[in-house]
Image (cartoon, rainbow, N blue to C red):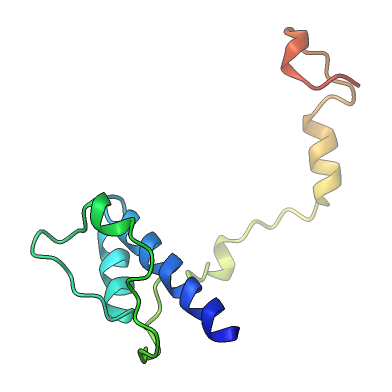
Amino acid sequence: MLAAVICNLLEGLRTVACLIHPVMPGTSTKMLTALGMAIPDKGFYLLAQIQNWGQMQPGIRIDKPGILFPRIDVPPKAVSQDKTPPEKKASATLPSNPKPDNPGAFCPE
């Protein structure tokens, strides 16, 4: 049962890795390489090649992948020094009972 869940998870990751190629080609390539998938000569898979479920072979061994999205640390001096609680900031900028110009713009009360 667990093996089937993991295999389905890997199939989902394979599909995501193929579909994100147009907007994140580097991440797509890293994911496909980590999954042991060959990168096509064109550099990407066609939709007809992606849609077939079951391309991940049961029993394959996958090494620990590298970091796809490294953490970005913000330097302490760049952090705002404003000590106003978030509740106070929100109430100071938003009216307490907004009346929309377009009545259909908000859910009815």
